Amino acid sequence: MNTEALERLHRIAFSTPNLFTTVIILSFSFFIIYELNFGVLNFLAFSIALALFIPILGIKFDIKRYSFFVAFISISSILINALSRYLNTNPVGIFVAFITTTVLYFASEAETLKVSIASSVESLLLYPNIATILGVLLGIIFIKFLSKKINGYNVRLYFKRFLLSWLTGDPSYFEEVLKKRATSFRGWIKCLKIGKVKLVTTSFHPGPMRNIGGARLVERINSIENAVYLHSPTDHSLNPASANDVERLIDSIDCDDVKLKPMKPFDLESDNYILRVFPFDKIRLMFIVGKKCIDDLPYDLNVDNAVIVDAHNAHCEDFKPNLEELKELVNRGLEFESEPCEMKYVFKKFRVETNSICGSVAVLLLDYGFERYAIVVVDGNNVKLEFRKEIEDFCAKRGFKAIVASTDNHSKTGISTKFTYLPVGSDERDRVIFEILEECFKLNFEDCDVYFAKRDVEIDVVGKSFCRFIDEVGRFGLSVTKLYFALLAMSFALSIIL
Image (cartoon, rainbow, N blue to C red; front, side, top):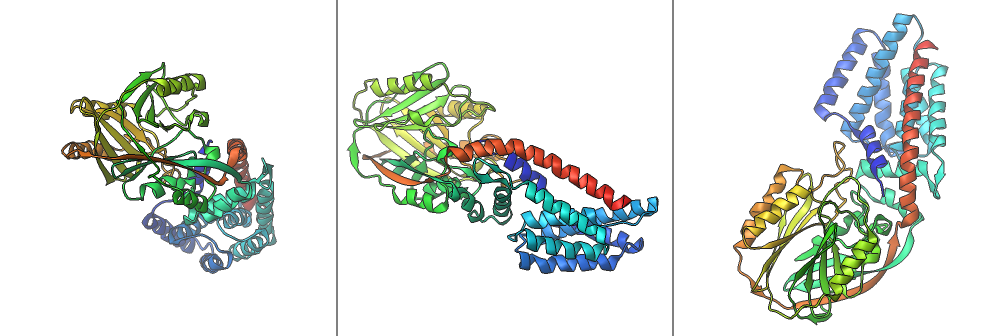
């Protein structure tokens, strides 16, 4: 599922200066308005009316966004008034009315009628002439244009709910859209318990973004004491639709069903992947590692008698998995014979947050007597290949064969307007992982019992129709952006020449 269109819209809509800069701009613009006699009382009336409409319409403006919007309107009006004075025409408020109508609609809980009335009042306070209403009408036309349905989703309501969630941090706005066309899916949640550590994986995907729906999944599992989320082969169509669905998954976790005996680990390879297998007598823990590139793997790779992990540890721009190659590799891993052995472990989880790490780094060390392994699970969205190899080399020099895996966490998608998400290794602070490993290598290994459990669970997921909608709305969103800027340019010109 491609969320690039959403992130582009967010960057356009919400890339604002900091509050101090905004206040400086606002103060300077009011000074110019006063000095040039452009109607400072009108601007004060506009500002006060906007503040009054915030609670009435449920506008999701904090002080920074409120100040920026007033500053933007002030600067725009200075330009309109100055150009009108130069051209010897009468300025009108078409541009201001168009901007105010569209912004108030998408940034508030109010519907079109209430927004139209508020926008008319606002704009007429600034430009008290009948032509100003034309801007409100243009805004309504643009809003109605967005009422197109794609795959059953109303684009206007989708964008409005999406922006409300982003403005407020409240996922329920957008989850309402997801739940309307969600589909029920019966999946599973698996837990492999080694000593005190619980390795949890599920058939569901941790998305779509930020704190919406299944994007909470990784954080909720990792918040459980000694639990670590592992990313299974799955895709965005299996994103849980809401917070309630995530909680149903969490409530289904069970780790103490069947006792297991450890067996000797082994590696297998294909052209594009490495399969590192930690076998037990009844199930196998299998990490699929991309040699050069890996992202979401097909759901069909999952099998009952194994915990298959998409290591998500070689970031690239365009990934197309070869299903036949992957199935053949997994089947070889299931059929390869091993023998019983002893196993000890060390586990520690650390709280870490950077621009690319979402909350934690967990290290599980396994000692088989003849060989030692380090499983490093970083809570992030994929890993830069060179950084992964650096971790592997670091561990190898200290006698450990390393597996580096990421959680495919989407909680940082859209948090900042400067970037969507960054793979682990993009932030210099990510190098704390080496300090963490050094600390773990000093710990004493302990004996452990191993248990496994699998539970079926049925929840609502966003479904394939939503993923197709996201892909299509990206193309439609580009057309909408072009139309919006065209209407902005036209309304600005009409504000000067009418």
